[in-house]
Length: 483
Image (cartoon, rainbow, N blue to C red; front, side, top):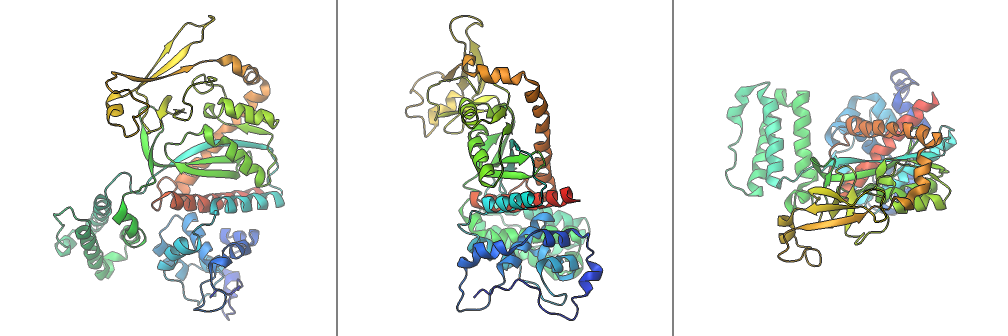
């Protein structure tokens, strides 16, 4: 049963907060900035209102997740810190002497209460609303880009995942007391996941029993992460490493396994929209959605700034119809005009190559034809034919027995003459200089809030991680702009 009780419980010790949590404390400022009752309104239908044991208020549970993201710690560590950190307790609406939750409650909250909620748009829209109300969001320009996040399990088998995490924990222990090695269980020799799980649990038990060693911060953090992997993600471990994650390409020679978060950000560095996709999706295809989401959040968009990935034909037409300026340089490989099988081959601007519908990247490119003649030049992209021979999607794409597989693109720059002229204007050149801002925001998400690696398995988990991380960085930015 859920009660609509968001106020701090009465306590004779509440005045201590006025002493130990000053007015300039970040979490105090956050509490004063945001009315978190929107969380209750959004989640109240996920709870029973008439019977059963009283549930922990969803606002407090959400704040726990927010603290976890802001300080980039595990479930266990964020709860542990809320026992003694008065700024945490104040932010959570707790009395100084009030007991904390069980860390496992956060897992249940994510899986049961946040299920089927469009948390990403909800939290971004809320921060944009706050930014507009506090008069810190004034521009009519958005900057767009994508950042990649590696899958938590990064193409490893479930057994390899546990082995890797166990190894890191053992190394941390050896650095302090190598003699404990004699007490550790014998490593399994089979390939069975069950045996590795049994070994992992025994290893944890041994370290837990040694209270001196287990309290070292460098060991405690690694052990909590291992425990969380076993308990929170055991179902995913038994199924696969990460069924949703896909291979994406950062450059022609480098790839990653995971997800992409496509972002739109105002010139004040407040994120106004985001979409989370699997790693192989191209950046340009997300532009229209980012513009529409930004407008739905309350932003009046007049100018869009991005790299060459966003200058494809459909995006030029979309922004032109809405009287928006698209500050994105033309790329002949992207903006070539009409081409065959547009839905089967997409251009990856980071690698500079086309990707087929199976996710295979072209291995080389050749340009045919002469410049400044009546006929159009073409770019031909060649794929690894050995992959095509065994590809499950080869029917209708690869002709059996063929010695090569290529895809040709006709370059028709005349279709983009207006955009080419716009590129030469001073407005375009000045606005292009603003694009660096979103690179810094991507770095803040990754290095400040653990967005470089997904914290759970699956696209839904990645979307949830993105929602809370963006909510956190937006609120931090709003507080900074208000000073």
